[in-house]
Length: 116
Image (cartoon, rainbow, N blue to C red; front, side):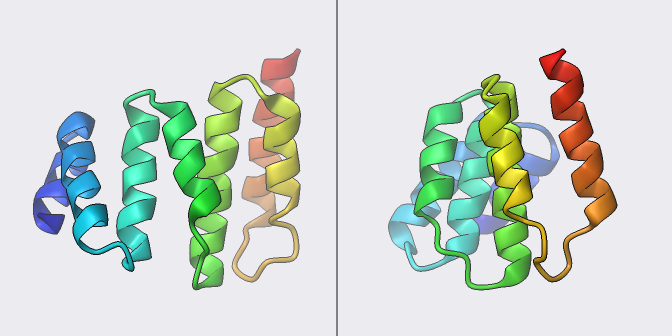
């Protein structure tokens, strides 16, 4: 099921990927990566509130996952036109190991551009 979800995701068949990852989260709720992948798929199919809810529930077990979740959350908020919340999310990443400050500045610049 994991490989199938991965294949769906990488062929832009996000609805199929959602189905796979929803099932995987039910079967293996302890596997945080499945929850993260489900949130990504939900975001891709436009189910923003559900994706955001999952992001808020996940407790990252590595700094890299924390960064990915924060970027995803900021992207969701950006798409929902909740610009100030997206900026706040990005600012929360400052000082984390492995965070690319340049990418963070670019993301924040994109938000400001869309706000204008």
